Length: 467
Ligand SMILES: *Cc1c(COP(=O)(O)O)cnc(C)c1O
Image (cartoon, rainbow, N blue to C red):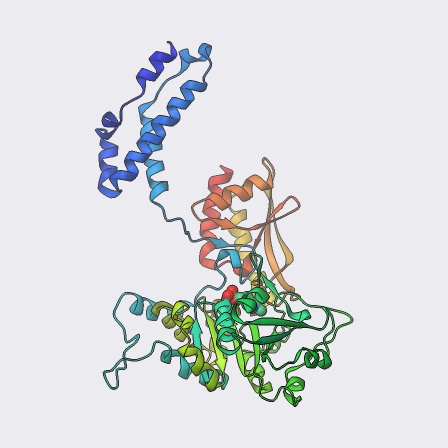
């Protein structure tokens, strides 16, 4: 056989379309995608013929069945959503790359009701007139934080932008050099602050900022003092920073609002659960901060959102800022956030039912038991690997509590016949998309972030990979 003959053997698009399996495919998938897959698969065969050596062409064959299977697989791949559910086996609870916080199953029905129906999003059911989408969340936030007023935007970066654009658009904002936080993806809070305000006046040094530094930064143009909680790093050793109370006491700053970006919004004093104390929103307001901003999907465990709480006079102004329209939240976010916040009315319920809090506060005993169950299930597979239960540490993640080392239990797998990186890749690309860690030559499944009802999926994928 010559190459010319091999090319001639390539089926035409029309002949493939007449195949029964392809006809069935047309019932369930868009024609355009199927046609594209047919052309792709034929083209890759053509390329194969071009590459093949003349003396190997004799054995070359086009197996129609395989071709059809490839087309079906390719169509399915094209039709699949790009965004996929994954199993987080990393032990990092607020994993920024894996979607940060998971919503509580308790909010599911509220979220679905609102998403799939009409709602009173901007309608006042009392008087039958137009209402405000922001009013839905104000009551619950006031109740939980003691704030005078609240406003919700798309995320915390948007909250910082809106606050400064409203309060300090044409003026100066004083901020300590020790608090110039960079969050993930090389975004700097200071850059966002610069976008919002006229000018950032950086004072003090990286490790030490004194009250005199703040005073030296003060001018006629000062519109606000910004405090940023260094949520994702700590400066240790020879350090000093100025507290809210001290700033509040200064005569110069009497009429200057103090804004605090808390990053991760915490409503519960986590030191009660054996963790390091993280400043809560309530504590910040008690100290006299005028405006506090924080995320909805970090420690709070709700949907992505930026929550602004504080003095009514400032929040009223923000509501009138045209930027608010550009940063506004949708009905699904409002529903998910209100339903999440409602759980905080009973702290115990919040800890029990909000996945982020539940995973962070999970006891070592509980994790030990959970790892034992997973270990047994994997051992029952009798795969060619060394499988162990091991103590390890997991992290809170999401730029929250950077120093906190959470003791945990993991199940480790060391394959005997292939590399651990091959195992990692196969699990990641499997239908269940299992994302774990590698440490030296072991694959690590941290049970802190794995649901027990996901164990069987992991076992199923391991079985496929090891057979
Ligand atoms: C995470 C973080 C932000 C950004 O919040 P997003 O909700 O991701 O926009 C801003 N400030 C601090 C201190 C943070 O930790």
